[in-house]
Length: 150
Length: 150
DNA sequence: TATTGTTATACTCTATAACTATA
DNA sequence: TATAGTTATAGAGTATAACAATA
Image (cartoon, rainbow over all chains, first blue to last red):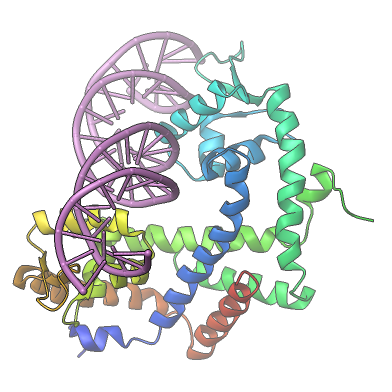
């Protein structure tokens, strides 16, 4: 009965190489991704918010928090900093004054239209090294992996 | 000539679903992983350091920084906090007094022997839902994805 | 009473660069 | 001069819980 495990046996579990591969793949991707994001003067969470708001008519804090996977308390700070930079503004909808609609300002929209396509080309340069079927296989593999934690 | 891209065309690039899948898979895994780590009273980077030091005779700051993927300045703070908790100590090797050998204390070792196997079982419970060939396929897919960013 | 978002608190992690001690 | 690690600086993100305003 394997209810207990010593640390040396634990370290040899066959799933650990996959865990390491997930972590290093994500980190390697992020390092590439963030190198370009930081050139825009935004932090990665700020960039995420700008890109999430792009081509929308605005989002409420709770929707935005859900999409960008940060808590509402953290999002308050991120939106504050973007507001200070003049890239987003808070609008109070008359029908529900508990909410704020977060909207890109003209400056925010201009930045989005500039950096999002740029960033896309920056990523495309690397993803072009994968064939369409490889891309699909990777997506399927990731989806399968995710499913076991849901 | 596609040297430029508008934001709506950019958003439709076929690699974006794979990017999202990588991010959400990693985040979903981390949420599961960290739920257990936080119960140990350690932060994820602290847990990482303890597990990296386990079953070794110690490591230097620079080795440890490399293994855990944090900068040496950040590692100083992490090791400080672990030292305050009495889980690691800094040893000065006589042959090179510029270095510190970071070693688990008996308390640190005891914690490692307790939490690492526990954590392994906690992960194994989910990974057991994958067949060995699925696990291998996922690892290969991740490895291929990582390769394009290296 | 429930919901939306802010605020307060306190900490961890981050990067960068200057610095100390040793080699 | 080069290396190992710390310190200083400054900021960003994190969680949690209490709070105000509105519904």
